[in-house]
Image 1 (tube, rainbow, N blue to C red):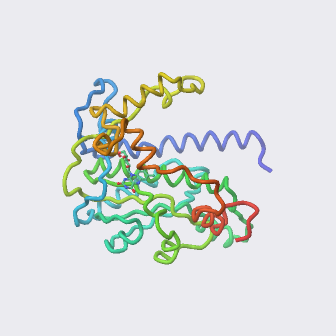
Image 2 (cartoon, helix red, strand yellow):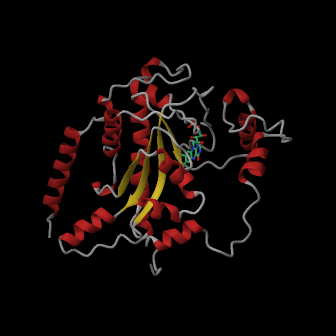
Image 3 (cartoon, rainbow, N blue to C red):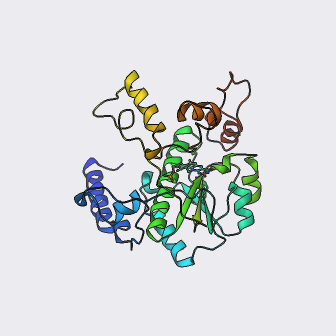
Length: 298
Ligand SMILES: Cc1cc2nc3c(=O)[nH]c(=O)nc-3n(C[C@H](O)[C@H](O)[C@H](O)COP(=O)(O)O)c2cc1C
């Protein structure tokens, strides 16, 4: 058994070693200036902040131009620097360069596709090789791995942009028959679950605007949770309607007969509310098959 003092010691050296090894992202050569004029005060702006503020999605219109191998490797190494629970890196990143395969996997094609999967199979193999019993088959394991996975993906987005490579995060992998992913990519049937696809590449044309974000009531809560007042909810409706804010995914909601953008969003985009479910969704079915839902037979 580890004594408290030893634990304390190892925690201290963990923190010291980590501090010495850190700083990877800040060392990037940041080349991306972003789209919009940077309105942040100079004191709160630097290359990293400018890169983050300039992030934008390319909605599928990528050139048929590969991402240079050196840039790809830098992006992957940056992605791996992301914090992750217990440093167990409970994810796998599948690098796909075949454009036909990119399309089949996520519905989009670019210079390269990184498929980020929550995955414990590497840890399982390590445990098995040492003769340990190891069972990551719980929702907690899944949520933790999903967090590790998406954080790593977002770091890749930032790193890519800093190198002048654009991106699209897409959950197109969860549309259509999800079983195709296991078939096409030979994914392990259990304890491996595709979370998000990241298409990297170069746009055929620059996006016209940088999308806005809500940043007030209901988004940032100070000290404790604040429930929206009626007036604040109405203000949000107005913010979405304000075309200067660039919050909408479709600016033609008026032309399509809707009074507010959010009317379009809830009716045309989200659609009818789900009826009381009588069948499980393919997502739940697949999570069960993947062994992450407790008390289920795989
Ligand atoms: C989980 C997730 C799934 C997404 N799926 C798609 C997608 O399938 N197609 C697409 O064009 N954009 C997709 N996006 C991009 C969003 O539409 C985009 O981030 C959002 O509209 C804000 O635009 P911006 O990233 O340019 O600021 C996705 C983003 C996330 C985080």
